[in-house]
Length: 122
Image 1: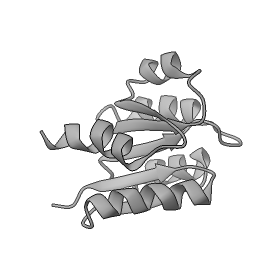
Image 2 (image 1 turned 90 degrees about the horizontal axis):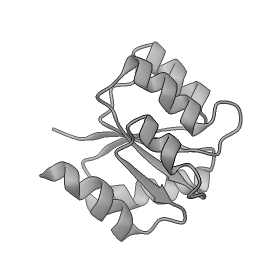
Image 3 (image 1 turned 30 degrees about the vertical axis):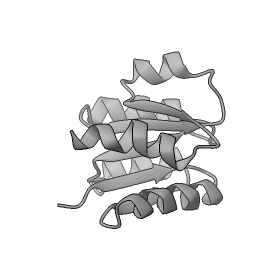
């Protein structure tokens, strides 16, 4: 069964980089992307959001990643949220929404796989 992954980031370049890293690791990953938190929440509320792992940027216009995660947690406690951001300043808020992990950009393949994907395989 394919792992379903969502990436929510306002940077198309970062979405492309992360997608490439993930698909190079496992070409069977099913990846969908969102350019902001509001679009992601719309999909979730319309029950179109059947994913296992969410990579979520923090700095996005409108609904930021922390606010998005808070709204997600009100609806889905089981979703693995991995924050990807340019700042180390939001660790406390990330863990208040029970983030699985927190990666500081620019991310590299090894940190993404070693700390986010490999633990899920065990």
